[in-house]
Length: 222
Image (cartoon, rainbow, N blue to C red; front, side, top):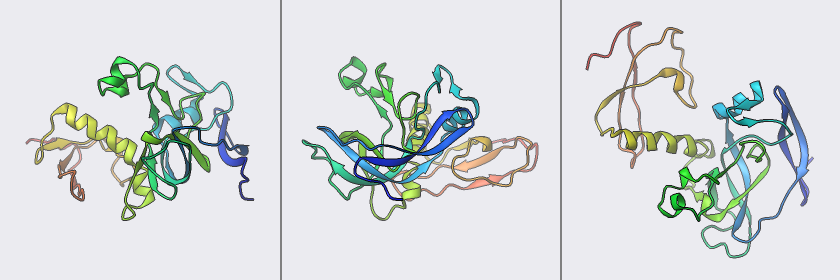
């Protein structure tokens, strides 16, 4: 069955281990909002915690809700006053939606906003649905040359890029990578923790990361 104008399908988490595909209300975008038809979703570690344990820190699944916050899609509808994107644009949704009025927001550090609404942090619904609505400024276009599956990794990539900038990592430096924290790809590494060397690439070009598996128990000496 396909969705109607007033309903859509979503993956609803009722409690730990209890995922259900259900029909839920499909809302209309308000002033300054856009509706995104989801093309692809990533699965965050937080989603896994909520599914397996029903909670993560202070966030508890105490009522049915929709997880997911790493997504790409196509703008399917826009509310009044939207000028940044239009219907048909391919976009990724930035999941942390701040108040935009506090000191942190006005100083550009909106990630520190204490009133932030984060998609998929219970009880706020996320993106494991046919559609999601976000403020227009939180829908970021991506080019047709980029696959939707790759675009869905924009949010975790941004987190890593921010950490690199905060850590002062420079182009060409060698860094140690914890293989257990790799996102989106699984490699047949040994269960024993190993060291890896990664060559940093220019993020403004096509990023090619070289990961070299070292011998078991071997230390990075450079």
